[in-house]
Image (cartoon, rainbow, N blue to C red; front, side, top):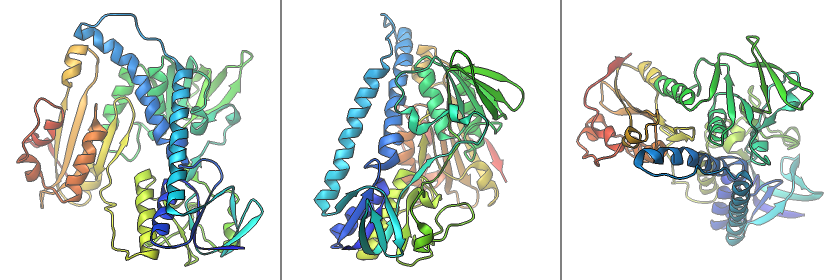
Length: 451
Protein backbone atom coordinates (compact mmCIF):
# COMPACT_ATOMS: atom_id res chain seq x y z
CA UNK A 1 0.00 0.00 0.00
CA UNK A 2 1.42 3.38 -1.07
CA UNK A 3 1.68 6.07 1.59
CA UNK A 4 1.80 9.83 1.06
CA UNK A 5 2.45 12.86 3.18
CA UNK A 6 -0.43 14.57 1.36
CA UNK A 7 -3.10 13.28 -0.97
CA UNK A 8 -5.38 15.64 -2.91
CA UNK A 9 -8.78 14.51 -4.15
CA UNK A 10 -9.62 16.61 -7.21
CA UNK A 11 -7.46 17.83 -10.08
CA UNK A 12 -9.02 21.25 -10.52
CA UNK A 13 -7.22 24.56 -10.18
CA UNK A 14 -7.18 24.59 -6.39
CA UNK A 15 -6.23 20.95 -5.95
CA UNK A 16 -3.46 21.09 -8.54
CA UNK A 17 -1.96 24.22 -6.98
CA UNK A 18 -2.04 22.66 -3.52
CA UNK A 19 -0.38 19.45 -4.75
CA UNK A 20 2.32 21.26 -6.72
CA UNK A 21 3.29 23.62 -3.91
CA UNK A 22 3.35 20.84 -1.31
CA UNK A 23 5.53 18.67 -3.54
CA UNK A 24 7.87 21.60 -4.15
CA UNK A 25 8.26 21.91 -0.38
CA UNK A 26 9.45 18.33 -0.11
CA UNK A 27 6.25 16.43 0.66
CA UNK A 28 5.41 13.13 -1.02
CA UNK A 29 2.16 14.01 -2.77
CA UNK A 30 -0.48 12.12 -4.75
CA UNK A 31 -3.52 13.47 -6.55
CA UNK A 32 -6.61 11.83 -8.06
CA UNK A 33 -8.97 13.16 -10.72
CA UNK A 34 -11.89 11.19 -12.14
CA UNK A 35 -12.91 13.42 -15.04
CA UNK A 36 -10.99 16.47 -16.29
CA UNK A 37 -7.54 17.73 -15.33
CA UNK A 38 -8.02 21.41 -14.65
CA UNK A 39 -11.51 20.92 -13.23
CA UNK A 40 -14.65 22.87 -14.04
CA UNK A 41 -12.93 26.15 -14.88
CA UNK A 42 -10.69 24.78 -17.62
CA UNK A 43 -13.12 22.26 -19.10
CA UNK A 44 -16.75 23.25 -18.56
CA UNK A 45 -16.51 26.70 -17.01
CA UNK A 46 -14.52 29.92 -17.13
CA UNK A 47 -12.12 29.20 -20.00
CA UNK A 48 -14.39 27.68 -22.67
CA UNK A 49 -17.23 29.99 -21.67
CA UNK A 50 -15.13 33.09 -22.27
CA UNK A 51 -13.99 31.72 -25.63
CA UNK A 52 -17.65 31.26 -26.54
CA UNK A 53 -18.52 34.78 -25.35
CA UNK A 54 -15.72 36.18 -27.49
CA UNK A 55 -16.91 34.17 -30.49
CA UNK A 56 -20.49 35.40 -30.05
CA UNK A 57 -19.34 39.03 -30.09
CA UNK A 58 -18.03 38.95 -33.65
CA UNK A 59 -21.46 39.32 -35.25
CA UNK A 60 -22.07 42.56 -33.34
CA UNK A 61 -18.54 43.75 -34.14
CA UNK A 62 -19.30 43.29 -37.84
CA UNK A 63 -22.55 45.24 -37.50
CA UNK A 64 -20.81 48.01 -35.55
CA UNK A 65 -18.18 48.32 -38.29
CA UNK A 66 -20.82 49.71 -40.69
CA UNK A 67 -20.98 52.92 -38.65
CA UNK A 68 -17.24 53.34 -39.24
CA UNK A 69 -17.55 52.94 -42.99
CA UNK A 70 -16.79 49.23 -43.38
CA UNK A 71 -18.92 47.34 -45.90
CA UNK A 72 -19.27 43.71 -46.88
CA UNK A 73 -21.35 40.61 -46.40
CA UNK A 74 -22.32 39.70 -42.86
CA UNK A 75 -20.19 36.86 -41.43
CA UNK A 76 -21.82 33.46 -41.02
CA UNK A 77 -21.57 31.62 -37.73
CA UNK A 78 -19.55 28.41 -37.71
CA UNK A 79 -20.38 26.66 -34.44
CA UNK A 80 -18.62 23.36 -35.34
CA UNK A 81 -15.43 25.29 -36.11
CA UNK A 82 -15.66 27.08 -32.78
CA UNK A 83 -16.22 23.82 -30.90
CA UNK A 84 -13.22 22.21 -32.58
CA UNK A 85 -10.99 25.17 -31.73
CA UNK A 86 -12.32 25.25 -28.17
CA UNK A 87 -11.72 21.52 -27.71
CA UNK A 88 -8.17 21.81 -29.02
CA UNK A 89 -7.41 24.63 -26.58
CA UNK A 90 -8.89 22.70 -23.66
CA UNK A 91 -6.84 19.63 -24.57
CA UNK A 92 -3.74 21.81 -24.58
CA UNK A 93 -4.56 23.16 -21.12
CA UNK A 94 -5.30 19.65 -19.78
CA UNK A 95 -1.85 18.56 -20.88
CA UNK A 96 -0.25 21.59 -19.21
CA UNK A 97 -1.88 20.71 -15.88
CA UNK A 98 -0.58 17.14 -16.07
CA UNK A 99 2.89 18.35 -17.06
CA UNK A 100 2.99 20.79 -14.15
CA UNK A 101 2.10 18.02 -11.71
CA UNK A 102 4.64 15.63 -13.17
CA UNK A 103 7.32 18.30 -13.16
CA UNK A 104 6.69 18.90 -9.46
CA UNK A 105 7.00 15.19 -8.70
CA UNK A 106 3.34 14.62 -7.83
CA UNK A 107 2.08 11.06 -8.38
CA UNK A 108 -1.01 11.10 -10.57
CA UNK A 109 -4.02 8.78 -10.23
CA UNK A 110 -6.81 8.85 -12.80
CA UNK A 111 -9.98 7.59 -11.17
CA UNK A 112 -12.53 8.22 -8.43
CA UNK A 113 -11.15 8.47 -4.90
CA UNK A 114 -13.29 7.26 -1.98
CA UNK A 115 -12.57 7.22 1.74
CA UNK A 116 -12.40 3.81 3.40
CA UNK A 117 -11.40 5.31 6.73
CA UNK A 118 -9.96 8.67 7.84
CA UNK A 119 -6.51 7.88 6.39
CA UNK A 120 -7.24 5.36 3.62
CA UNK A 121 -8.58 5.93 0.10
CA UNK A 122 -9.73 3.53 -2.59
CA UNK A 123 -8.94 4.53 -6.20
CA UNK A 124 -10.00 2.05 -8.87
CA UNK A 125 -9.55 -0.78 -6.37
CA UNK A 126 -6.11 0.36 -5.24
CA UNK A 127 -5.78 1.39 -1.61
CA UNK A 128 -3.49 4.24 -0.56
CA UNK A 129 -2.86 5.91 2.77
CA UNK A 130 -2.02 9.53 3.52
CA UNK A 131 -1.07 11.48 6.62
CA UNK A 132 -3.01 14.47 5.35
CA UNK A 133 -5.81 14.62 2.77
CA UNK A 134 -7.30 17.57 0.91
CA UNK A 135 -10.82 17.49 -0.57
CA UNK A 136 -10.88 19.72 -3.65
CA UNK A 137 -13.61 18.20 -5.80
CA UNK A 138 -15.34 21.46 -6.72
CA UNK A 139 -19.00 21.86 -7.60
CA UNK A 140 -21.52 20.60 -10.10
CA UNK A 141 -24.65 22.10 -11.70
CA UNK A 142 -27.92 21.88 -9.80
CA UNK A 143 -31.30 21.56 -11.50
CA UNK A 144 -34.79 22.25 -10.13
CA UNK A 145 -36.90 19.17 -9.54
CA UNK A 146 -39.80 20.04 -11.81
CA UNK A 147 -41.93 17.84 -14.04
CA UNK A 148 -40.11 17.31 -17.33
CA UNK A 149 -36.82 18.54 -15.91
CA UNK A 150 -35.02 15.68 -17.62
CA UNK A 151 -35.79 17.41 -20.95
CA UNK A 152 -33.43 20.28 -20.06
CA UNK A 153 -29.65 20.55 -20.08
CA UNK A 154 -27.26 22.07 -17.54
CA UNK A 155 -24.12 24.13 -18.10
CA UNK A 156 -21.80 21.11 -18.47
CA UNK A 157 -23.87 19.96 -21.46
CA UNK A 158 -23.84 23.36 -23.18
CA UNK A 159 -20.14 23.06 -24.00
CA UNK A 160 -20.78 20.03 -26.19
CA UNK A 161 -23.81 21.08 -28.25
CA UNK A 162 -23.56 20.08 -31.91
CA UNK A 163 -25.12 23.36 -33.05
CA UNK A 164 -26.91 26.46 -31.77
CA UNK A 165 -30.68 25.92 -31.41
CA UNK A 166 -32.95 28.51 -33.00
CA UNK A 167 -34.82 29.03 -29.73
CA UNK A 168 -33.44 28.73 -26.20
CA UNK A 169 -35.01 29.19 -22.78
CA UNK A 170 -32.37 29.92 -20.14
CA UNK A 171 -33.58 29.47 -16.56
CA UNK A 172 -31.59 31.42 -13.96
CA UNK A 173 -30.39 34.99 -13.58
CA UNK A 174 -26.95 34.38 -12.08
CA UNK A 175 -23.49 34.35 -13.67
CA UNK A 176 -24.10 31.34 -15.89
CA UNK A 177 -27.61 32.32 -16.98
CA UNK A 178 -26.79 35.83 -18.16
CA UNK A 179 -23.54 34.72 -19.78
CA UNK A 180 -25.13 31.98 -21.85
CA UNK A 181 -28.06 34.23 -22.73
CA UNK A 182 -25.49 36.51 -24.37
CA UNK A 183 -23.71 33.61 -26.08
CA UNK A 184 -26.85 32.11 -27.61
CA UNK A 185 -28.22 35.53 -28.58
CA UNK A 186 -24.92 36.47 -30.19
CA UNK A 187 -25.15 33.37 -32.37
CA UNK A 188 -28.62 34.41 -33.53
CA UNK A 189 -30.90 32.36 -31.30
CA UNK A 190 -34.16 33.66 -29.89
CA UNK A 191 -33.46 33.71 -26.15
CA UNK A 192 -35.97 33.78 -23.30
CA UNK A 193 -34.33 34.37 -19.92
CA UNK A 194 -36.39 33.32 -16.90
CA UNK A 195 -35.44 34.14 -13.30
CA UNK A 196 -37.23 34.44 -9.96
CA UNK A 197 -35.76 37.76 -8.82
CA UNK A 198 -36.97 41.15 -10.11
CA UNK A 199 -33.46 41.76 -11.52
CA UNK A 200 -30.57 39.51 -12.61
CA UNK A 201 -27.38 38.86 -10.60
CA UNK A 202 -28.77 38.60 -7.09
CA UNK A 203 -26.23 39.90 -4.56
CA UNK A 204 -24.64 42.41 -6.93
CA UNK A 205 -25.03 46.18 -6.66
CA UNK A 206 -28.53 47.27 -7.66
CA UNK A 207 -27.34 49.86 -10.18
CA UNK A 208 -25.42 47.11 -12.00
CA UNK A 209 -28.40 44.77 -11.87
CA UNK A 210 -30.71 47.39 -13.34
CA UNK A 211 -28.21 48.31 -16.05
CA UNK A 212 -27.72 44.66 -17.03
CA UNK A 213 -31.48 44.10 -17.26
CA UNK A 214 -31.68 47.04 -19.67
CA UNK A 215 -28.69 45.75 -21.66
CA UNK A 216 -30.24 42.29 -22.00
CA UNK A 217 -33.42 43.82 -23.39
CA UNK A 218 -31.41 46.05 -25.75
CA UNK A 219 -29.77 43.03 -27.35
CA UNK A 220 -33.09 41.32 -27.87
CA UNK A 221 -33.17 38.87 -24.97
CA UNK A 222 -36.77 38.33 -23.83
CA UNK A 223 -36.66 38.66 -20.04
CA UNK A 224 -39.23 36.99 -17.78
CA UNK A 225 -38.39 38.43 -14.37
CA UNK A 226 -40.07 37.29 -11.15
CA UNK A 227 -41.07 33.93 -12.65
CA UNK A 228 -39.94 30.33 -12.55
CA UNK A 229 -40.66 27.22 -14.62
CA UNK A 230 -43.29 24.82 -13.32
CA UNK A 231 -43.17 22.17 -16.03
CA UNK A 232 -41.49 21.23 -19.31
CA UNK A 233 -43.50 19.28 -21.87
CA UNK A 234 -42.11 17.40 -24.88
CA UNK A 235 -44.07 18.35 -28.00
CA UNK A 236 -44.78 16.08 -31.02
CA UNK A 237 -42.15 17.87 -33.14
CA UNK A 238 -39.51 17.22 -30.40
CA UNK A 239 -39.58 20.86 -29.27
CA UNK A 240 -40.17 21.79 -25.62
CA UNK A 241 -42.99 23.79 -24.07
CA UNK A 242 -42.06 25.56 -20.84
CA UNK A 243 -44.90 26.42 -18.45
CA UNK A 244 -44.04 29.37 -16.21
CA UNK A 245 -45.39 30.16 -12.78
CA UNK A 246 -47.55 33.01 -14.10
CA UNK A 247 -49.20 30.80 -16.74
CA UNK A 248 -46.98 31.92 -19.64
CA UNK A 249 -46.11 29.16 -22.13
CA UNK A 250 -42.87 29.34 -24.15
CA UNK A 251 -42.18 26.99 -27.06
CA UNK A 252 -38.49 26.37 -27.53
CA UNK A 253 -35.88 24.00 -28.93
CA UNK A 254 -33.67 23.91 -25.85
CA UNK A 255 -34.15 24.48 -22.13
CA UNK A 256 -30.99 25.36 -20.23
CA UNK A 257 -31.00 25.22 -16.42
CA UNK A 258 -28.54 27.73 -14.92
CA UNK A 259 -29.98 27.43 -11.44
CA UNK A 260 -26.88 27.28 -9.29
CA UNK A 261 -24.24 24.78 -8.27
CA UNK A 262 -23.75 22.42 -5.34
CA UNK A 263 -20.60 20.81 -3.88
CA UNK A 264 -19.48 17.71 -5.76
CA UNK A 265 -19.40 15.20 -2.92
CA UNK A 266 -20.89 12.14 -4.62
CA UNK A 267 -19.49 8.80 -3.50
CA UNK A 268 -16.59 10.30 -1.55
CA UNK A 269 -17.42 8.24 1.55
CA UNK A 270 -17.22 11.22 3.87
CA UNK A 271 -19.14 9.36 6.58
CA UNK A 272 -16.45 6.66 6.61
CA UNK A 273 -13.86 9.40 7.07
CA UNK A 274 -15.79 11.15 9.84
CA UNK A 275 -15.98 14.39 7.85
CA UNK A 276 -18.92 16.54 8.88
CA UNK A 277 -21.11 18.60 6.55
CA UNK A 278 -22.72 21.88 7.57
CA UNK A 279 -26.50 22.48 7.36
CA UNK A 280 -26.12 23.66 3.74
CA UNK A 281 -24.66 20.31 2.68
CA UNK A 282 -21.15 21.70 2.19
CA UNK A 283 -17.96 20.52 3.87
CA UNK A 284 -17.65 22.32 7.20
CA UNK A 285 -14.20 23.91 7.64
CA UNK A 286 -12.56 26.39 9.97
CA UNK A 287 -10.42 29.37 9.02
CA UNK A 288 -7.45 27.05 8.36
CA UNK A 289 -9.49 24.84 5.98
CA UNK A 290 -9.61 22.03 8.58
CA UNK A 291 -12.65 19.74 8.55
CA UNK A 292 -13.99 17.88 11.58
CA UNK A 293 -10.99 15.58 11.11
CA UNK A 294 -7.89 17.65 11.85
CA UNK A 295 -5.76 15.93 9.19
CA UNK A 296 -8.41 16.30 6.46
CA UNK A 297 -8.85 19.65 4.74
CA UNK A 298 -11.20 21.12 2.14
CA UNK A 299 -10.69 24.01 -0.28
CA UNK A 300 -12.59 25.64 -3.11
CA UNK A 301 -16.22 25.15 -4.06
CA UNK A 302 -16.84 22.14 -1.78
CA UNK A 303 -16.80 24.69 1.05
CA UNK A 304 -19.23 26.97 -0.87
CA UNK A 305 -17.83 30.21 0.52
CA UNK A 306 -16.47 32.29 -2.36
CA UNK A 307 -16.73 30.08 -5.42
CA UNK A 308 -14.15 31.60 -7.74
CA UNK A 309 -11.22 29.83 -9.40
CA UNK A 310 -8.56 32.34 -8.22
CA UNK A 311 -9.88 31.97 -4.67
CA UNK A 312 -9.54 28.17 -4.81
CA UNK A 313 -5.98 28.58 -6.17
CA UNK A 314 -5.08 30.96 -3.35
CA UNK A 315 -6.60 28.62 -0.75
CA UNK A 316 -4.67 25.65 -2.13
CA UNK A 317 -1.40 27.57 -2.16
CA UNK A 318 -1.89 28.91 1.37
CA UNK A 319 -2.80 25.48 2.74
CA UNK A 320 0.23 23.75 1.18
CA UNK A 321 2.60 26.37 2.58
CA UNK A 322 0.97 26.21 6.00
CA UNK A 323 1.28 22.42 6.12
CA UNK A 324 4.79 22.05 4.68
CA UNK A 325 6.35 25.52 4.54
CA UNK A 326 6.65 28.59 6.68
CA UNK A 327 3.01 29.61 6.22
CA UNK A 328 3.80 33.28 5.74
CA UNK A 329 2.07 33.81 2.39
CA UNK A 330 -1.35 35.42 2.46
CA UNK A 331 -3.99 36.70 0.08
CA UNK A 332 -6.65 39.37 0.46
CA UNK A 333 -10.10 37.78 0.45
CA UNK A 334 -11.83 41.09 1.15
CA UNK A 335 -12.21 42.72 -1.26
CA UNK A 336 -12.10 40.20 -4.12
CA UNK A 337 -12.55 41.51 -7.67
CA UNK A 338 -14.70 39.39 -9.94
CA UNK A 339 -16.40 39.61 -13.31
CA UNK A 340 -19.44 38.29 -15.16
CA UNK A 341 -18.86 37.87 -18.89
CA UNK A 342 -22.32 38.92 -19.90
CA UNK A 343 -22.94 41.25 -22.87
CA UNK A 344 -21.74 43.81 -21.90
CA UNK A 345 -19.52 42.46 -19.12
CA UNK A 346 -19.99 43.26 -15.45
CA UNK A 347 -17.17 43.58 -12.92
CA UNK A 348 -17.22 44.37 -9.24
CA UNK A 349 -14.97 44.62 -6.19
CA UNK A 350 -15.91 45.19 -2.57
CA UNK A 351 -19.18 46.27 -1.00
CA UNK A 352 -22.42 47.14 -2.74
CA UNK A 353 -24.14 50.39 -1.90
CA UNK A 354 -26.65 48.61 0.34
CA UNK A 355 -23.91 46.69 2.17
CA UNK A 356 -21.88 49.84 2.79
CA UNK A 357 -24.92 51.76 4.03
CA UNK A 358 -25.33 49.24 6.86
CA UNK A 359 -21.89 50.19 8.17
CA UNK A 360 -22.41 53.95 8.14
CA UNK A 361 -22.84 56.88 5.73
CA UNK A 362 -21.29 56.28 2.31
CA UNK A 363 -20.75 58.72 -0.53
CA UNK A 364 -21.88 57.33 -3.88
CA UNK A 365 -20.30 58.42 -7.16
CA UNK A 366 -21.80 57.26 -10.47
CA UNK A 367 -20.81 57.89 -14.08
CA UNK A 368 -23.07 56.68 -16.89
CA UNK A 369 -22.31 57.32 -20.54
CA UNK A 370 -22.25 55.96 -24.08
CA UNK A 371 -18.67 54.84 -24.80
CA UNK A 372 -16.88 56.48 -27.70
CA UNK A 373 -17.11 53.43 -29.97
CA UNK A 374 -20.88 53.36 -29.82
CA UNK A 375 -21.38 57.07 -30.46
CA UNK A 376 -20.45 56.08 -34.03
CA UNK A 377 -21.53 52.43 -34.23
CA UNK A 378 -25.08 53.40 -33.29
CA UNK A 379 -25.43 50.44 -30.94
CA UNK A 380 -27.50 51.05 -27.80
CA UNK A 381 -24.81 50.32 -25.23
CA UNK A 382 -24.24 52.21 -22.00
CA UNK A 383 -21.34 52.02 -19.58
CA UNK A 384 -21.91 52.55 -15.87
CA UNK A 385 -19.17 53.03 -13.27
CA UNK A 386 -19.75 53.40 -9.57
CA UNK A 387 -17.64 54.06 -6.48
CA UNK A 388 -18.88 53.48 -2.93
CA UNK A 389 -16.83 55.56 -0.48
CA UNK A 390 -16.85 55.45 3.31
CA UNK A 391 -17.72 58.98 4.40
CA UNK A 392 -15.70 58.88 7.62
CA UNK A 393 -12.38 57.53 6.24
CA UNK A 394 -12.72 58.41 2.54
CA UNK A 395 -11.68 54.81 1.76
CA UNK A 396 -13.15 53.22 -1.37
CA UNK A 397 -15.30 50.35 -0.17
CA UNK A 398 -16.79 49.26 -3.48
CA UNK A 399 -16.24 49.63 -7.22
CA UNK A 400 -18.75 48.42 -9.78
CA UNK A 401 -18.90 48.58 -13.56
CA UNK A 402 -20.89 47.36 -16.53
CA UNK A 403 -19.39 48.03 -19.94
CA UNK A 404 -16.65 47.03 -22.35
CA UNK A 405 -13.36 46.02 -20.70
CA UNK A 406 -14.93 46.05 -17.24
CA UNK A 407 -13.03 42.97 -16.11
CA UNK A 408 -9.67 44.30 -17.31
CA UNK A 409 -10.19 47.56 -15.43
CA UNK A 410 -11.48 45.91 -12.26
CA UNK A 411 -8.33 43.86 -11.82
CA UNK A 412 -6.33 47.08 -11.43
CA UNK A 413 -9.03 48.64 -9.23
CA UNK A 414 -8.77 45.54 -7.04
CA UNK A 415 -5.07 46.22 -6.47
CA UNK A 416 -5.84 49.78 -5.40
CA UNK A 417 -8.62 48.71 -3.06
CA UNK A 418 -6.52 45.93 -1.53
CA UNK A 419 -3.88 48.57 -0.81
CA UNK A 420 -6.50 50.70 0.97
CA UNK A 421 -6.95 53.44 -1.65
CA UNK A 422 -9.10 56.42 -0.76
CA UNK A 423 -11.30 58.50 -3.03
CA UNK A 424 -8.63 61.23 -2.76
CA UNK A 425 -6.12 58.78 -4.24
CA UNK A 426 -8.45 58.21 -7.18
CA UNK A 427 -9.00 61.98 -7.58
CA UNK A 428 -5.30 62.84 -7.68
CA UNK A 429 -4.48 60.12 -10.23
CA UNK A 430 -3.99 61.39 -13.80
CA UNK A 431 -6.33 59.79 -16.29
CA UNK A 432 -5.51 58.21 -19.67
CA UNK A 433 -7.37 60.07 -22.41
CA UNK A 434 -9.48 59.21 -24.31
CA UNK A 435 -10.54 56.05 -22.48
CA UNK A 436 -13.51 54.86 -20.51
CA UNK A 437 -11.09 54.02 -17.71
CA UNK A 438 -10.34 57.69 -17.03
CA UNK A 439 -13.86 58.04 -15.63
CA UNK A 440 -12.63 56.23 -12.52
CA UNK A 441 -10.46 59.24 -11.67
CA UNK A 442 -12.77 62.05 -12.82
CA UNK A 443 -15.89 61.32 -10.75
CA UNK A 444 -15.71 64.44 -8.61
CA UNK A 445 -19.39 65.12 -7.97
CA UNK A 446 -21.14 62.97 -5.38
CA UNK A 447 -24.33 61.42 -6.75
CA UNK A 448 -25.95 60.71 -3.39
CA UNK A 449 -25.32 59.59 0.20
CA UNK A 450 -26.25 56.09 1.33
CA UNK A 451 -26.96 55.17 4.91
